[in-house]
Amino acid sequence: MQNSQNRVQWVYSSATNQELEARYDQWAADYDKDLDDDFGWVSPRKTAEVLARHVPVNARVLDAGAGTGLVGEELRRLGFQDIHAMDLSLGMLEEARSKGVYRDLRQMALGSTLDYETDSFDAVISVGVFTEGHAPPQGFDELARITRRDGLIVFSLRLDLFEQGGFKEHQAQLEKSGKWKQVELSDTFQPLPKGEPEMLHRVWVYRVTA
Image (cartoon, one colour):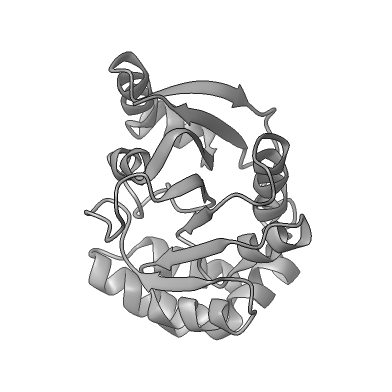
């Protein structure tokens, strides 16, 4: 891991959740600096601002795949106070805890059953987690379960993965089955303008309907 580009590829090449967790644990201390200095990571800010257009600041919000808390910092900047975090990596969660923006932090993996009661949150936000080698499209099922009816699920996603990674089909199936309804789709943007300007993301907003 000689530079941040190598670290990203090293993490994305993880074969199991256990390996992914261990590699994020090792990267945690340098994660924020790498993402800011070398990539100019803008998705936390952009996605949080989309959520804030739809959700009141007194809402109970889950940051699903919180990492080091970059999204939590953006939500706090926008006035949110009741913010909760979950992530696969304890190392990343410890970095997030140090920022003092979350009421509760728990270790969990998207794609598995989540240790939250049904209808626990007014909104869920997930940035950079539904991606290659990380959370699968089926992870949305649990997010819909733990979000109250009429609550929102807001997430960023690479356009190529949306088309080719099973996300397009699974998102459509959830809408067809009455689990959620799309209420916004952002314009495309470059999430990593310094490091990978060719990559494009969008932010999806769904309202839970069942």
